[in-house]
Length: 216
Image: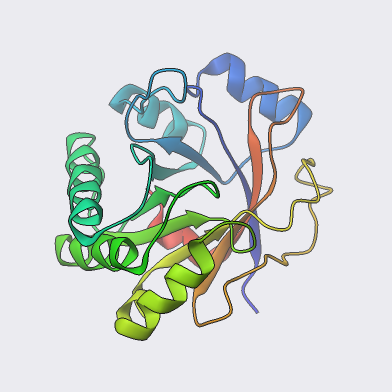
């Protein structure tokens, strides 16, 4: 069975203050999830300088694309995927790295959007990822429908589950890897098990060690 590794994600830029806060209160992340672009009042965008800082601390970057307000329609999915790839290339993120679509549980989601995300990203050399809630909202049904229509969705995409949510912990006290998943095939390789830590503005995650090969 693959080993599990601990990491975090944040909407804030990773700088010395945030890194020291996490290190002193939680542990040393193996990876740090960050957003490819800035969204006012939502997230600061990743920069090449920040990527270098994350690498200098021995961590990998997990890239997230969050300029999505609903995940409906093939054309919309294709546009989102192209934009994610554009920003990844702008930041010199190499191929074979996973790009996660940030699909919120309150979003409208359909199979066409998910299929488009996967089918548009794959030919670019990047790997399609889907951050999602497999219990609440429309994602699970839409994903399984997409898998039915194109098995590559199950084989090639990496799923990042937000359920269950036992709560933020330090690395040492992280729970056993046990994410919820859709009721069909899928590679659930990462689990955001704790959100909105009080001591530092981060979420805490556990990942299958195999994910590290697809992080930058």
